[in-house]
Image (cartoon, rainbow, N blue to C red; front, top):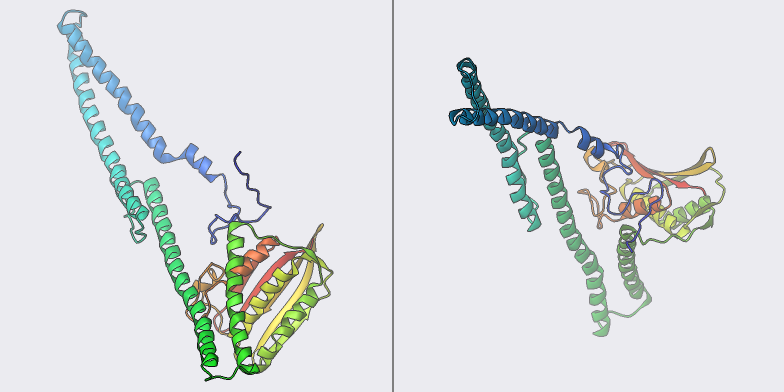
Length: 377
């Protein structure tokens, strides 16, 4: 029995590209394209016309042959217009054949290049591109191939960067732990509370990295399970802010909380806590000293559906428009970001698993505001 995969309304399947809208805005366009594609209509017309005049030409030639053998009789007046007609049909047939050959070459040449390029992509060369030539429909196909190859190349580069980042993120705390433990064994360092605390902090870094990778793996595979329970979202937000108070005080950053009274909502508190911690941590990282981080929550209702909007706004340098649309992609990092580029991607998966949406607004020099919604079931 074949497995059946079902996705709730608005939930993007794990195999759908992250930068494209789900569900598609025009999900039936491929059917209309198949029915009304002008390229295939032109080919069909050329085929019908070529066969029609070819039938007339060969019929006329057969008539002349039968007349020569005396099987049928064509009178002299008929021959006077019959021969020019055969010649005209022959010239037209040659012209139609030349026209059809030219058009077929316009189609076959770029398709041959596409076949060669596909073979290179299959061998792992994602840098290959094809020239966009030929009829409009063929150019559209080639453009789609180039876009696919570009995406594969980008994903392959991200995978390579991810492996390098994971190696680096794992190596740093392990190296620190090994150095300290060797020093304790050799008697160079004392096994006091302060040094053991530093080793414990390094294990926390490793644990967080492994948890992020595990959460991402579950989310991508569609195996992420939520443990929903009635939760006081306002209290959850205050707990997250309290956990970052020492970091904010150290940088002299003010955290401004503006949360309306929100009734209990049915969510997974651990996962939403993870989302909030990630967003608040990012806001503090990019907010300069003496800056302000604004955190807010408000409830809205539309008919029988209740939603809660949560936002975190920093007063940092902002995000370039070229990067803004991709900050939620897996392993995507800007030039000034640390880590492996997993935090916002995981936040996106967790919010969407709750049936919500997450988005970012930013202007260079004006800070960044990240908002997300949660369904209040």
